[in-house]
Image (tube, rainbow, N blue to C red; front, side):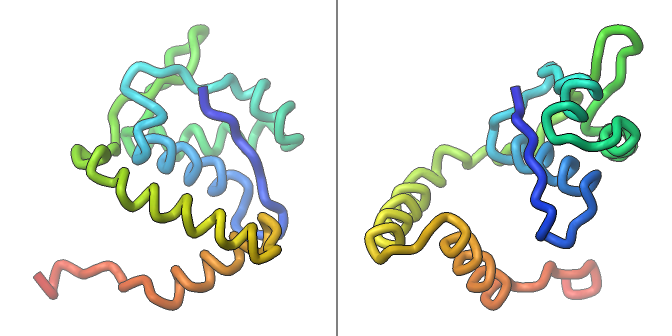
Length: 134
């Protein structure tokens, strides 16, 4: 089951952080079709937010067709975003693990590592292509 967390310093609204975390878990193959998401009460208690915020995130995911709400039963993953080539990512994952070890050996803490990665990613990430460019 997915474990949610919020970053108050991210500048991203809490409900969107929850939506992004579910999408990420689906892309990484951590959530599969039929998996049950934690209840609204469980998430609200775990990350200390208003239950309406969790409901908003779940509604967004439902609107996107990624989850289905079954009243009295729960919210379930209804599709998947995982890449068929997920196993092909393993060499990259190994390189990233090695890079993380070097960063820790250099004395960086988790927050510094994350900041370095994100700033580099944002600097070198290509903007998504538009339909007109295709």
